[in-house]
Amino acid sequence: MTPADRARAFGRAARAASRAVGNATRAQKDAALHIVARRLYDERRMVLDANARDLAENADLAPALRDRLKLDEGRLESLADAVRAVALLPDPVGRIDRLEVRPNGLRVGRMMVPLGAVLMIYESRPNVTIDAAALCLKSGNAVVLRGGKESLHTNRALAALYRRALTEAGLPADAAQFVDDPDRELLRELLQQDAYFDLAIPRGGTGLILAVTDQARMPVIRHWQGICHVYVHATADLDAALAIALNAKVQRPGVCNALECVLVDSAVADGFVPRLVAALQAHAVEVRGCPQTQTLAPTVVAASDADWDTEFLALICAVKVVSDYDEATAFIDRHGTHHSEAIITRDHGVAMRFLREVDASCVLVNASTRFNDGGELGLGAELGISTTKLHAYGPMGLEELCTRKFVVLGDGHVR
Image 1: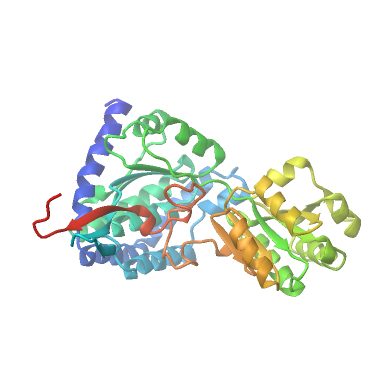
Image 2 (image 1 turned 180 degrees about the vertical axis):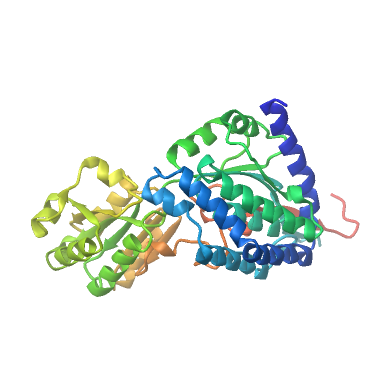
């Protein structure tokens, strides 16, 4: 079978399964999700053995990528908790919003409906296999999962587990298909199947996202890199600013909502920059700074122009002193990636300006950028964090996997 034939087979099966899960009841979908969560525990040894094989075969991966690839019992339990959380969420499918009565007596509303069939393309993170499948099922969508070759064994084990759960719940296993072949020609052909797939979602490095965007014939929602900033305003609580910057940088440096650059207002720089640098370096963070930062903390490495536009995904942090709020927000506009941006301030007016004026999928006041996460924001799990404004912006949960159609309720009305 040629790659084109295989791609069409995936698409046809996904389209057929999407009709079944789109009409499934909440009870059916939630039962399947609880079975998935149970199987993640019961079959954990199989999954962890597969993950160990991936880690062994990819020993040369960068530390951030190995961290994303690695599973252990704690991460599997967190994954099962996320699936249970999705099961507990209200089912968006069929909900009618904004039902209004027109002057002629017609009732007009908008009903939430599944997108249909989703093509999910991702790298490194095997948890995406379960998160994406769970969210797609609850929102009534079928999904075809194409992970990276570095996580092939883990993804294969998780997808098989998930499909067994669907069958046990009486739902079509093809509601979650796994592309068990990293062949790029097959991926290219999948991206041509706009007759079957309603949406493609790439999640990974810049090369992957650009390739999918360039080749796809269906709409694409991009989950772009996160060059995230924390701006320490002139009125900031400096103890809180230090704690937030440390959390955002060192808790898990290899993820997209980790801090990459701290902007410090010149009004507080003399007292704060040395504290910040010392605290970061105590956690083994390499600090790269502007000339003023170097003056205040001589152990800092000089930042290059490229550092302001780099997603380090490692224990590296850039620090820049800015003259005021306007310079800080202009810097974010120039160097940010519309992902996560935070301000530390005790000035309510400045905080509200920052919320309005900074263009990012999540804007935070006095909180770590690490909170831009589907679970932390109440979505249960997430497919990823979209930096594409149409049709989703920020973490993609159940509602972002639905669209709305108009429904009209009449009583013999004619125009």
